[in-house]
Amino acid sequence: MADAKVIPFGDDSRARRKGARTRAARGRQDAAPPRTPAAPAPGQPPLVSVPSAASAASAGAAGAAGAESAEGRGAGIPPQGAAGRAQHNDERAAEGETPMDDARTGPPPLSETLGAVADRLLGGPWERKVASGLAFLRRRVTGDYEVDEFGYDAELTDQVLMSLLRPLFEKYFRVEVKGIENIPAEGGALVVFNHSGTLPVDGLMAQVAVHDHHPAGRHLRLLAADLVFVLPVINELARKAGHTLACTEDAQSLLERGEVVGVMPEGFKGLGKPFSERYKLQRFGRGGFVATALKTRVPIIPCSVVGAEEIYPMLGNSRTLARVFGIPYFPLTPTFPWLGPLGTIPLPTKWTIQFGTPIPTDQYPAEAAEDPMLVFNLTDQVRETIQHTLYELLVSRRSVFF
Image 1 (tube, one colour):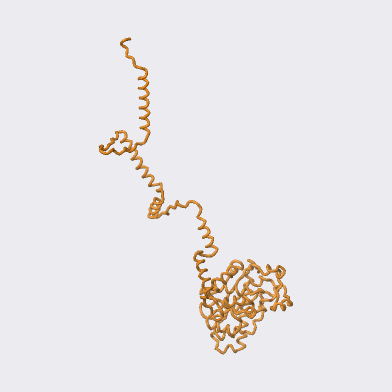
Image 2 (cartoon, rainbow, N blue to C red):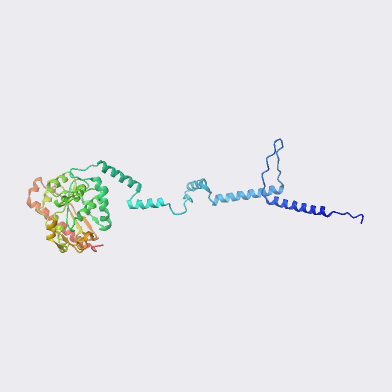
């Protein structure tokens, strides 16, 4: 017992606790990432860390794996961030591929959607349309626009009046235009139409047909009755649109200036005829339009309009009301006057406007306009041509509305 070595209990427990703390600290050191050594204090030599062989091997393996990962990422995964996307798009564009645009993955902004809707409604870039409209209003307010001696306002007609009539022409009546090339590209021409429809809508549709479909973009100047130029508002609009009074002096002046002039010799007799006599031409008067064409040596172009007769089927005529209002006739249709203002809405019939082969007049001498037989024969030729074309179009038509 004397030789036995006795270890105090307190020392043994302290040793065990110290060993446990040492092992825990070593475990935390192995698990924690390497830290950058602190800078040496002033006057002290710099600390140099020497990696062990195991740590060096681990670092080499990690570097190789990182290089492989970077190489694989460069081959398949595009770089992140705005600068990375721009670099990647440049590389794809250089290789002929479509650039990547991962900045917009959701729906387009509201401003772009509204801009697209405005472009579709205005028929073009809305910014340009708005700027053009503001410039137009400025010229209107300041009076910086021109009209001819008849009151024709080309700018107002092109930008406003044609824009208002065009939906009616294209969408409502779906007008089909034929033979528009028969109107010469330059010089005067006299276009002779049949007249029908209770209201003179056919003349307006013929004006749109020439304005929008002629290759040279010519404008039709109609000769209208006296009643048009005594009505308020209608008088100003007719003048602004280029129309004038149906008289020899105005017609001759326009033709000598090289304008395309439209005339409807039937007048109110054709416009206000009953529905039972549809597409039957009335008298063409005494042939004054033919005499004017002979004087100015311009071609006469017969034109036939199908579809206008059915927009307001005139079933009757109240002569008493016509005298009260001072108009040639007061139409009674299936909808007017029974439905009030709604009765003025025309039926959506399908139209066809066909311009026929020109009848030349330049081979006749200047004094031919004074020959009544020649004037009568040419008048009858024009009338028969229009009537025959009307019959052909009616036979080939599938339906009044389609």
